[in-house]
Image 1 (cartoon, helix red, strand yellow):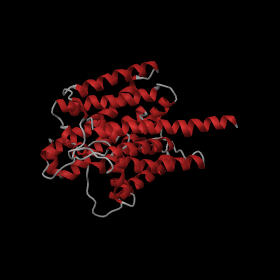
Image 2 (cartoon, helix red, strand yellow; image 1 turned 180 degrees about the horizontal axis):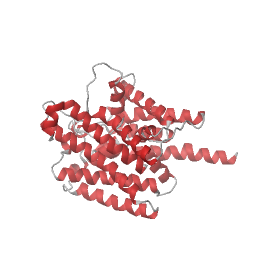
Image 3 (cartoon, rainbow, N blue to C red; image 1 turned 30 degrees about the vertical axis):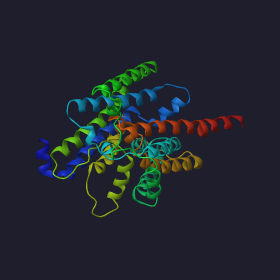
Image 4 (tube, rainbow, N blue to C red; image 1 turned 90 degrees about the vertical axis):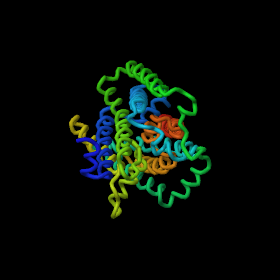
Length: 355
């Protein structure tokens, strides 16, 4: 069945939700098997290690660049029509929100995407943290926190009513993004070899990057034939988590890519964990850990919405099409996470050892 026939049969909105579901399942399976986690990568880096988590993150990021830029060169997508590229971006939001998200990510022991994957495996800490993240994200989108978010975001925005395309601004050729992705992939494979990471985990890490490209290609294809405007987007979890929450709370909510994405990730991770025999109920270790996780989740909800995306949405999805504010937000997430690990986790371990 071709795309036009599918749209005629089930409608444009259900098709967008179906594409979100498909993207989410691929992402969930790959992320669960690869143990993909930006928080783990930043903690390794903060402690002077270039270990397996760094290698997996770099490989995911680089393969997302390769898959997406390859699709763009083949005419399968147009990054200029992507939602995050076609609207003004916030430099101040990227800096402040990225730092806040990075802090929250370390406190919660996982970014929003990782929490969703872990929740599917039976991790009750991630279930609670994920719900708090979604609620605060919704409060930041259209609730009591939205005026503060708007005020901070409007401090410094991009010019000309659009976000900055780093490749175009830099005057680089069309194939530059593909080459950059390939170079980072080589670095990732070198680190992976040094840490003796198995081929299976590397394949699944690449699969996370493929899921990002899949979302871009599917939504772009739908936008070319749909009668009503369709958002060209891919995997991200700040806005979709809030939208999915409200979909089940409000009467009259409509289907869209976001509504399929979040359940898709959960289903994919659940199936992957079940096949691997990794389903296991886990709770908070103690009350201090619970307080840190809940605080971190709240910070990620606000920070992610202010930054224009989470570690996946800005860090990988936005980064894959070279959105200027997305790269800045990703950098600030690394800075916030590294600083928090130094000041909270590592300092706490030193103080405990001295007692």
